Length: 286
Image (cartoon, rainbow, N blue to C red; front, top):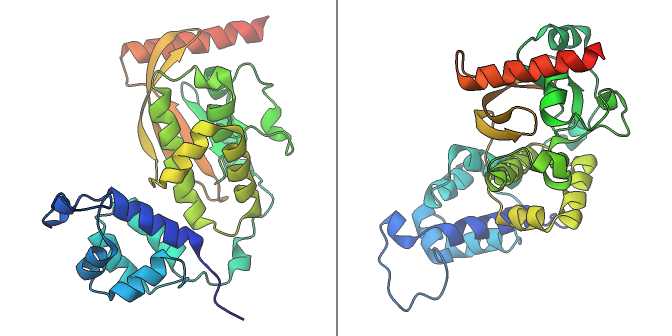
């Protein structure tokens, strides 16, 4: 049996090569240059590998490479740490891929207790596909009051935060800079895909988004990679208006991810978030 073709590796190397300007790597340029970015022979020389070997990798004629070779290529392409990590994951052979078969997504009792104890923090538990397994009342009120609160309990209808960001007009309208948010979502999903290359459900999600959203498809083809675990987002909320929140992600013992949003203490945004909590309480009293 022949070696499996790794088109992910080939297309990723080509995209990364084409984005690097020769002068970034100390190379001379001329008007006769006909390719965007670096030439294959330039990458090979910078990485210390033969041009033939590098070409085979980029043309998907060789499915895998050693970590040492991939790290050399990553330096030649000036990859970020997240991009380097992704290259190693898609470029080395997967050991025991059956171990990546996802189990049923469940929350353990301590995670459920944590969710119910969070007060002025919008929090949700996601699996690595970004399906929402649970959200507290404030997260629901912040992101998706138009959806049923109990929807994450339904395994067939669970909201997916990336699908919502691209396909749900209510959620899209929340972001003051949706273009930046959409790019962040896709770069994160690409990072996740490197960790779970044999997950059929993740592949279905990517396929569905590619078909239903031309914006997603265009961003996905760029093959940018980033592990977005913390930062700041600016919302334009229909109830409380402008809302700047910090977000963080934390790995949980049950294998899921806790995502939570909070405002800077004593800031106008904390006041706005508390107003949203007050509005939530008024809903519950009706």
